[in-house]
Image (cartoon, rainbow, N blue to C red; front, side, top):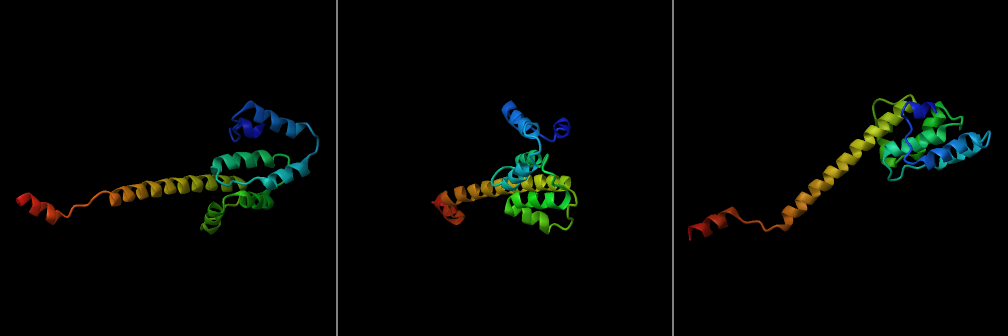
Amino acid sequence: MEDLKRGLLNYEAVGNFLVDLKEEFGRGDNGTIKIVKLKKIEQKSKMMKKFVQEFRRAVRGSRYERRPLIEEFKQGMNGTIMRKLIEAERSSRSIEQWYERAINLDRHWRESRQEQERLRGIREAESSSPRWNTVTNVIGAQR
């Protein structure tokens, strides 16, 4: 509930909230189930912000913390993003820092890919349009 109050969790539908609520309080000690669920979460092509929200929900009640929690987070994230975070000069010490840096890096990575695609489209459009030699145009205009 604390994560929800602080705005760290976002539910798109009431049903998702109710499923998580039932999981959290409906079965007693289900730490093992939560650990299995945590290990199965993968980012794949999801935006990092969405992945972090799912990961936060799975962490609650799993008893994971500190280094093991960070390791599980790294295991689930997109390989490209994970490598860039590990290769960074400044390493994150807390899971909150990992979340924040991963979200920022994912956003920049996606913006970069969009820009590359936009520029590729411009280049393809330019290469398919007929190019006129300036000298030919000048000579043709003088005739």
